[in-house]
Amino acid sequence: MLKVTKPFNQLLCILLFSSVSAFSVLGQETPYNQSSLISSKTGIDYTPLEESLQQQQWLRANEITTNLLLQSAEREQQGWIAIIQPKPPEDEVVNSLRITTPIKCEDLRIIDDLWKKHSEGKFGFTVQLDVFLETDNVPGRLVDTEAYDKFGEKIGWRNQDGWIQFKYNLNFSLQAPRGHLPNPRPEYQITGGRMNYIALTQTMQDCGMQRVAVSR
Image 1 (cartoon, rainbow, N blue to C red):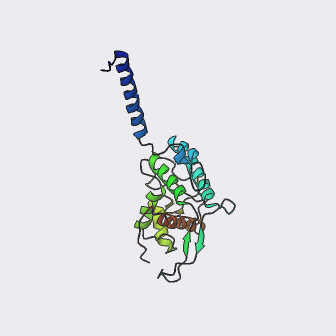
Image 2 (cartoon, helix red, strand yellow):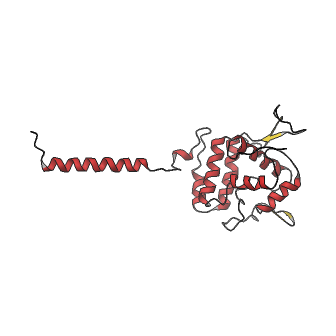
């Protein structure tokens, strides 16, 4: 019979403990590690955005977000993200154009998830989208200015005097209204700003970030 010595028993215990510890570490979920902050579609590194949000540098994070959206859409030279497409053949809406962006879904999700994560769910594009739909707006459609004005009032981009002056008059704190940040527009304009944001909502819908039924 094989005689098991005490040192051998101790060695077995050490190996077993090491294996269990390694398995436990590997089994832990790390939603955002270095690799997950680099888009597999565009190669863009979202670490600077993560760092700014971790430090609650909301103004800097907002500016970084605007630049990242332009990079993902490959629209840095143009300076805006919206593109206009003909409506799909199955679309029954009369005289309607489809306004969207070429932003990659993976990139948009990373940005949105980081904002929600570091604001405890108060900020983010999908947070804004809920309010956008509640105020009778439609993704990718220029429905009417009143609906968009109502959306702006709900999230604090607009007051009784009109659209607030960009950008230092935004509330860069957790005391801001729900959905106040990020604001992807380089400046407040009734036309260009509205077009860019409506295009972004269409991309969110196309990416399955919010399931909505277009009724108009």
